[in-house]
Image (cartoon, rainbow, N blue to C red; front, side, top):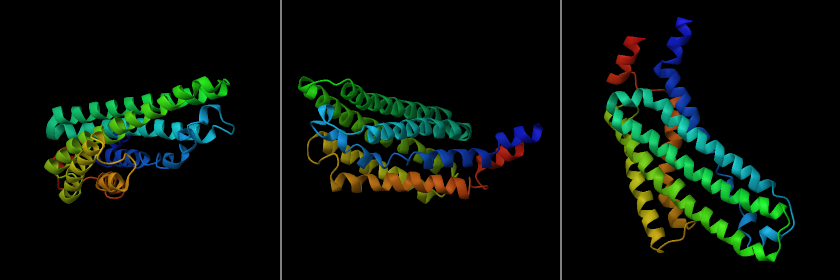
Length: 233
């Protein structure tokens, strides 16, 4: 039992869990195409299945839960660097997940209205819900991740738990994403434009690479935090 408890609290287990959860946050990528049908202005009164929208909603829920889980998994290690900032990261992830749930609820409301056989009078409602989803998406899956990656990048950089170059990519990428978000809010670029996509690449690279690194390599054994944890175990 003691050996099981030691493994459960070991840095390797924590890194593996966080890494897997970070990689799971990428399962929603297909929603870029799965939601094409619901963006049709006549979707709410049109024919055809709702399967793609429902699958996309499920994938987004997985992402939301994985995001919270990754922050919680890392908290036990990151709090030894700075407990307040580590707790802020958990809070930011919970806030991000909340917006994802809200956005998913908007799309599932469209599906529910469609299945109930509403008439053409519901077209403005359906279109408004899609616009609401897009606005929530720009906040929950674009703006809040700026805070996520700034907090996480800072903690990882200071603690040296992973290569500092990787941490810097997250920090710098967050500023690229923030610039894109501000430009979108002022109408300078479209939400799904090439520029917006390129601005999100560094953050995506950081999070995916971090997930892979934690799964394959784990934490840096030479980091003071890890030395302390290994000594206690």
